[in-house]
Amino acid sequence: MPTYEPFDWYRTPRYYDMVFDTGTAQEAGFLEAVAQRHAVPPAETGQPLHILEPACGSGRLMAELALRGHRVAGVDLSEGMLAYARQRFADRRVPTGSAKLLQGPMQDFDLHAHSAGRGYDLAHILVSSFKYLLTEQDAADCLRCVCVHLRPGGVFVLGLHLTEYDDPNATLERWRVERDGLDVICTIKSWPADAEQRTERVRSRIVVRSPDHKVPRRYETNWRFRTYDTPQLCALLAREPRLQHVATYTFHHDPARPTTIDGDDLGVVLVLRRTN
Image 1 (tube, rainbow, N blue to C red):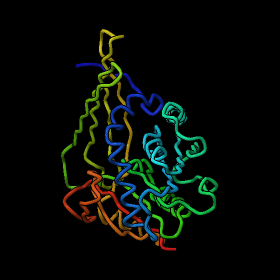
Image 2: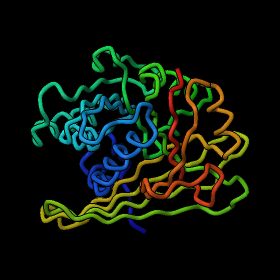
Image 3: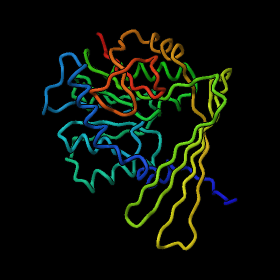
Image 4: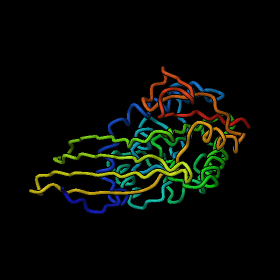
Protein backbone atom coordinates (compact mmCIF):
# COMPACT_ATOMS: atom_id res chain seq x y z
CA MET A 1 0.00 0.00 0.00
CA PRO A 2 1.30 3.50 -0.80
CA THR A 3 2.25 5.81 2.05
CA TYR A 4 0.61 9.23 2.35
CA GLU A 5 2.41 12.15 3.96
CA PRO A 6 0.38 14.17 6.51
CA PHE A 7 -0.51 17.41 4.79
CA ASP A 8 -2.56 20.53 5.53
CA TRP A 9 -3.79 21.49 2.08
CA TYR A 10 -5.05 24.82 3.35
CA ARG A 11 -1.43 25.83 3.97
CA THR A 12 -0.47 24.81 0.43
CA PRO A 13 -3.50 25.89 -1.59
CA ARG A 14 -2.28 25.14 -5.10
CA TYR A 15 -3.58 21.56 -5.20
CA TYR A 16 -6.81 22.44 -3.40
CA ASP A 17 -7.38 25.21 -5.89
CA MET A 18 -6.81 22.98 -8.92
CA VAL A 19 -9.47 20.55 -7.69
CA PHE A 20 -12.19 23.07 -6.87
CA ASP A 21 -11.60 25.77 -9.49
CA THR A 22 -13.27 23.91 -12.36
CA GLY A 23 -16.81 25.09 -11.50
CA THR A 24 -16.00 28.68 -10.60
CA ALA A 25 -17.64 30.41 -13.58
CA GLN A 26 -20.86 28.41 -13.18
CA GLU A 27 -21.00 29.09 -9.43
CA ALA A 28 -20.48 32.81 -9.98
CA GLY A 29 -23.28 32.89 -12.54
CA PHE A 30 -25.52 31.00 -10.13
CA LEU A 31 -24.87 33.55 -7.37
CA GLU A 32 -25.69 36.43 -9.71
CA ALA A 33 -28.92 34.71 -10.75
CA VAL A 34 -29.92 34.05 -7.13
CA ALA A 35 -29.44 37.74 -6.27
CA GLN A 36 -31.56 38.72 -9.26
CA ARG A 37 -34.30 36.27 -8.33
CA HIS A 38 -34.44 36.34 -4.53
CA ALA A 39 -33.01 39.61 -3.20
CA VAL A 40 -35.51 42.39 -2.43
CA PRO A 41 -35.33 44.62 -4.34
CA PRO A 42 -33.84 42.21 -6.89
CA ALA A 43 -30.36 42.80 -8.20
CA GLU A 44 -30.40 44.37 -11.65
CA THR A 45 -28.60 42.54 -14.45
CA GLY A 46 -25.23 44.13 -15.11
CA GLN A 47 -25.27 46.28 -11.97
CA PRO A 48 -22.48 45.75 -9.40
CA LEU A 49 -23.25 43.89 -6.19
CA HIS A 50 -21.61 44.08 -2.79
CA ILE A 51 -20.72 40.43 -2.09
CA LEU A 52 -19.39 38.83 1.11
CA GLU A 53 -17.73 35.41 1.35
CA PRO A 54 -16.98 33.93 4.79
CA ALA A 55 -14.45 31.06 4.46
CA CYS A 56 -13.30 32.49 1.13
CA GLY A 57 -10.33 30.14 0.80
CA SER A 58 -8.13 30.72 -2.22
CA GLY A 59 -10.27 33.59 -3.49
CA ARG A 60 -11.36 31.83 -6.68
CA LEU A 61 -14.98 33.07 -6.50
CA MET A 62 -13.96 36.48 -5.21
CA ALA A 63 -11.68 37.04 -8.21
CA GLU A 64 -14.30 35.82 -10.70
CA LEU A 65 -17.00 38.03 -9.24
CA ALA A 66 -14.72 41.07 -8.97
CA LEU A 67 -13.79 40.71 -12.64
CA ARG A 68 -17.52 40.72 -13.43
CA GLY A 69 -17.68 44.17 -11.87
CA HIS A 70 -18.79 43.37 -8.33
CA ARG A 71 -17.30 44.61 -5.07
CA VAL A 72 -16.21 41.61 -2.98
CA ALA A 73 -14.99 40.95 0.55
CA GLY A 74 -13.82 37.70 2.11
CA VAL A 75 -12.66 36.32 5.43
CA ASP A 76 -10.67 33.15 6.11
CA LEU A 77 -8.66 31.66 8.98
CA SER A 78 -5.80 30.41 6.80
CA GLU A 79 -3.03 32.90 6.07
CA GLY A 80 -1.75 30.51 3.37
CA MET A 81 -5.08 30.69 1.58
CA LEU A 82 -5.23 34.47 1.91
CA ALA A 83 -1.71 34.86 0.53
CA TYR A 84 -2.67 32.69 -2.43
CA ALA A 85 -5.80 34.81 -2.95
CA ARG A 86 -3.78 38.03 -2.92
CA GLN A 87 -1.46 36.63 -5.57
CA ARG A 88 -4.44 35.48 -7.62
CA PHE A 89 -5.90 38.99 -7.50
CA ALA A 90 -2.59 40.43 -8.70
CA ASP A 91 -2.14 37.84 -11.47
CA ARG A 92 -5.71 38.30 -12.75
CA ARG A 93 -5.52 42.09 -12.37
CA VAL A 94 -8.49 42.40 -10.08
CA PRO A 95 -9.15 46.16 -9.85
CA THR A 96 -7.57 47.79 -6.81
CA GLY A 97 -10.14 48.46 -4.11
CA SER A 98 -12.75 46.04 -5.43
CA ALA A 99 -11.62 43.12 -3.23
CA LYS A 100 -10.99 43.09 0.53
CA LEU A 101 -9.49 40.18 2.49
CA LEU A 102 -9.53 39.69 6.26
CA GLN A 103 -8.01 36.94 8.37
CA GLY A 104 -10.43 35.61 10.97
CA PRO A 105 -13.14 33.06 11.80
CA MET A 106 -16.33 32.87 9.77
CA GLN A 107 -18.45 33.27 12.91
CA ASP A 108 -16.83 36.47 14.19
CA PHE A 109 -15.59 39.18 11.81
CA ASP A 110 -16.25 42.78 10.84
CA LEU A 111 -16.30 43.76 7.18
CA HIS A 112 -18.99 46.42 7.37
CA ALA A 113 -16.66 49.16 6.15
CA HIS A 114 -16.08 47.52 2.77
CA SER A 115 -19.80 47.67 1.95
CA ALA A 116 -19.60 51.47 2.27
CA GLY A 117 -22.18 51.40 5.05
CA ARG A 118 -24.98 50.05 2.87
CA GLY A 119 -24.74 46.36 3.79
CA TYR A 120 -24.01 43.47 1.44
CA ASP A 121 -26.46 42.41 -1.25
CA LEU A 122 -25.24 38.82 -1.20
CA ALA A 123 -23.22 36.54 1.09
CA HIS A 124 -22.29 32.94 0.34
CA ILE A 125 -20.65 29.79 1.71
CA LEU A 126 -21.05 27.22 -1.06
CA VAL A 127 -18.95 24.10 -0.48
CA SER A 128 -19.85 22.77 3.00
CA SER A 129 -17.22 24.95 4.71
CA PHE A 130 -19.97 25.88 7.18
CA LYS A 131 -19.65 22.36 8.62
CA TYR A 132 -16.19 23.18 9.99
CA LEU A 133 -18.07 24.94 12.81
CA LEU A 134 -18.28 22.06 15.28
CA THR A 135 -20.64 23.55 17.87
CA GLU A 136 -24.22 24.75 17.57
CA GLN A 137 -23.23 28.07 19.11
CA ASP A 138 -20.49 28.72 16.54
CA ALA A 139 -22.90 27.83 13.73
CA ALA A 140 -25.55 30.17 15.12
CA ASP A 141 -22.95 32.91 15.58
CA CYS A 142 -21.98 32.55 11.91
CA LEU A 143 -25.59 33.00 10.82
CA ARG A 144 -25.90 36.04 13.07
CA CYS A 145 -22.62 37.59 11.90
CA VAL A 146 -23.54 37.17 8.25
CA CYS A 147 -27.04 38.48 8.89
CA VAL A 148 -25.86 41.76 10.40
CA HIS A 149 -23.59 42.31 7.38
CA LEU A 150 -26.47 41.93 4.89
CA ARG A 151 -28.73 44.80 3.92
CA PRO A 152 -32.44 44.22 4.54
CA GLY A 153 -33.59 42.15 1.56
CA GLY A 154 -30.09 40.83 0.90
CA VAL A 155 -29.54 37.07 0.63
CA PHE A 156 -27.19 34.51 2.18
CA VAL A 157 -26.52 31.45 -0.01
CA LEU A 158 -25.49 28.50 2.18
CA GLY A 159 -24.47 25.15 0.71
CA LEU A 160 -23.87 21.97 2.71
CA HIS A 161 -24.35 18.23 2.50
CA LEU A 162 -27.00 16.80 4.81
CA THR A 163 -26.54 13.52 6.69
CA GLU A 164 -28.64 10.35 6.80
CA TYR A 165 -27.75 8.95 10.21
CA ASP A 166 -29.06 5.49 9.40
CA ASP A 167 -26.77 5.12 6.37
CA PRO A 168 -23.91 2.75 7.37
CA ASN A 169 -21.88 3.36 4.22
CA ALA A 170 -18.87 5.57 3.70
CA THR A 171 -18.94 7.92 0.70
CA LEU A 172 -16.16 8.52 -1.78
CA GLU A 173 -15.65 11.33 -4.29
CA ARG A 174 -12.77 11.61 -6.73
CA TRP A 175 -11.54 14.34 -9.07
CA ARG A 176 -8.64 14.42 -11.53
CA VAL A 177 -7.25 17.68 -12.85
CA GLU A 178 -4.28 18.47 -15.13
CA ARG A 179 -2.83 21.96 -15.20
CA ASP A 180 0.58 23.61 -15.67
CA GLY A 181 2.34 20.27 -16.03
CA LEU A 182 0.76 18.83 -12.88
CA ASP A 183 -1.57 15.83 -12.72
CA VAL A 184 -3.57 15.89 -9.48
CA ILE A 185 -5.96 13.20 -8.27
CA CYS A 186 -8.00 14.09 -5.19
CA THR A 187 -10.09 11.54 -3.29
CA ILE A 188 -12.33 12.59 -0.40
CA LYS A 189 -13.81 9.93 1.86
CA SER A 190 -16.47 10.50 4.53
CA TRP A 191 -17.23 7.85 7.15
CA PRO A 192 -20.70 7.24 8.64
CA ALA A 193 -21.68 10.00 11.04
CA ASP A 194 -21.62 9.73 14.80
CA ALA A 195 -25.25 10.61 15.53
CA GLU A 196 -24.65 11.29 19.23
CA GLN A 197 -21.67 13.61 18.70
CA ARG A 198 -23.03 14.96 15.40
CA THR A 199 -19.67 14.69 13.66
CA GLU A 200 -18.31 12.81 10.69
CA ARG A 201 -14.71 11.92 9.89
CA VAL A 202 -13.47 13.19 6.53
CA ARG A 203 -10.19 12.36 4.78
CA SER A 204 -8.69 13.83 1.65
CA ARG A 205 -5.90 12.12 -0.26
CA ILE A 206 -4.01 13.83 -3.05
CA VAL A 207 -1.67 12.20 -5.56
CA VAL A 208 0.51 14.66 -7.48
CA ARG A 209 2.52 13.74 -10.57
CA SER A 210 4.86 16.24 -12.19
CA PRO A 211 7.85 16.26 -14.58
CA ASP A 212 10.09 17.33 -11.69
CA HIS A 213 9.45 14.21 -9.61
CA LYS A 214 9.91 10.64 -10.83
CA VAL A 215 7.80 9.26 -7.99
CA PRO A 216 4.26 10.57 -7.36
CA ARG A 217 3.83 12.59 -4.17
CA ARG A 218 1.01 11.48 -1.92
CA TYR A 219 -0.58 13.66 0.75
CA GLU A 220 -3.34 13.10 3.30
CA THR A 221 -5.46 15.48 5.39
CA ASN A 222 -7.93 14.40 8.09
CA TRP A 223 -10.58 16.52 9.79
CA ARG A 224 -14.09 16.43 11.24
CA PHE A 225 -17.30 18.09 10.10
CA ARG A 226 -20.44 18.86 12.08
CA THR A 227 -23.43 16.96 10.71
CA TYR A 228 -27.01 18.04 10.04
CA ASP A 229 -30.13 16.23 9.00
CA THR A 230 -33.09 18.29 7.80
CA PRO A 231 -34.73 18.84 11.23
CA GLN A 232 -31.37 19.80 12.78
CA LEU A 233 -30.67 22.29 10.03
CA CYS A 234 -34.15 23.81 10.34
CA ALA A 235 -33.69 24.10 14.11
CA LEU A 236 -30.42 25.95 13.59
CA LEU A 237 -31.98 28.35 11.07
CA ALA A 238 -34.73 29.14 13.58
CA ARG A 239 -32.07 30.61 15.88
CA GLU A 240 -31.65 33.54 13.49
CA PRO A 241 -35.24 34.57 12.65
CA ARG A 242 -34.10 37.56 10.60
CA LEU A 243 -32.91 35.08 7.93
CA GLN A 244 -35.95 33.74 6.09
CA HIS A 245 -35.51 30.56 4.04
CA VAL A 246 -36.91 31.46 0.62
CA ALA A 247 -35.50 28.86 -1.80
CA THR A 248 -33.44 25.67 -2.06
CA TYR A 249 -31.17 24.47 -4.86
CA THR A 250 -28.63 21.64 -5.21
CA PHE A 251 -24.87 21.46 -5.73
CA HIS A 252 -25.54 21.48 -9.48
CA HIS A 253 -25.83 25.27 -9.01
CA ASP A 254 -28.56 25.53 -11.62
CA PRO A 255 -30.92 28.47 -10.95
CA ALA A 256 -33.52 26.85 -13.21
CA ARG A 257 -33.77 23.76 -10.97
CA PRO A 258 -35.10 24.70 -7.52
CA THR A 259 -35.83 21.88 -5.08
CA THR A 260 -36.89 21.50 -1.43
CA ILE A 261 -34.85 21.18 1.74
CA ASP A 262 -36.25 17.66 2.31
CA GLY A 263 -35.87 16.48 -1.29
CA ASP A 264 -33.95 13.50 -2.65
CA ASP A 265 -30.61 15.32 -2.99
CA LEU A 266 -28.57 15.56 0.22
CA GLY A 267 -26.48 18.41 -1.21
CA VAL A 268 -28.61 21.49 -0.51
CA VAL A 269 -27.96 25.14 -1.28
CA LEU A 270 -30.25 27.34 0.79
CA VAL A 271 -31.20 30.93 0.00
CA LEU A 272 -31.80 32.89 3.20
CA ARG A 273 -33.13 36.45 2.91
CA ARG A 274 -32.67 39.06 5.61
CA THR A 275 -36.10 40.36 6.54
CA ASN A 276 -35.22 43.51 8.49
